[in-house]
Image (cartoon, rainbow, N blue to C red; front, side):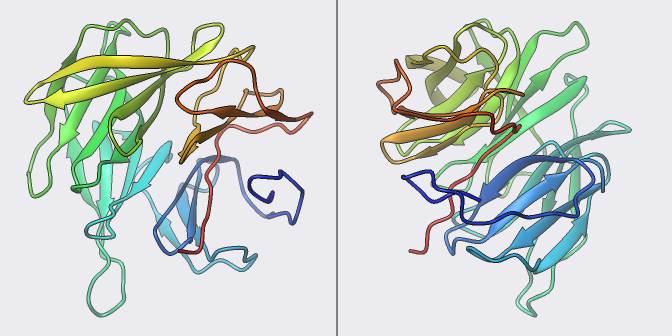
Length: 248
């Protein structure tokens, strides 16, 4: 755990199988997707003792918390199930997840809610091509979204306050594309280049900053959406994903 925006080491969490992606909610709680444990684990802001662990149908890959309902969405690949959505009940208990599939997806990677509670997820089809889909708030099935931009490798999906930000983790340098979505079409509005990064997979946008681990190398901080050269680098900090936890 590092302070933000200074990037000073303030703590360490342990006892995971193989932690993958992270996400945080409006209360500052952090969820960690552990593909080695087949679960997602919740921690309080700055805390080292977990609040709860939820078992997932498959190895969890990405996660996002709805700012409207507090639901937790998790991408995974298990017997056709590419998405699980957990609901937190009024009795303060998590329900078993609602599981979604889509025959157009071979695999899902990351997901992100927008400000209205609509969920977007990316992945690949059976031919290995990029896919983007939406689970509209209250909908019972996924809707595929047409994207003209070519992606080398699906990256993080996150609402940046104005656009849907989708990362391309397979290019050099890594890029984040901004899209406006209307109906079943995503229109590119711009892109952010993460200077000198070669494989930023699960980044986190926080205001005018984006933080991204460059897989098995360093963790970079860039201006967002300007991009360009990193403003800060945490050297030899190896990671797959990142999130920023704020007390609001």
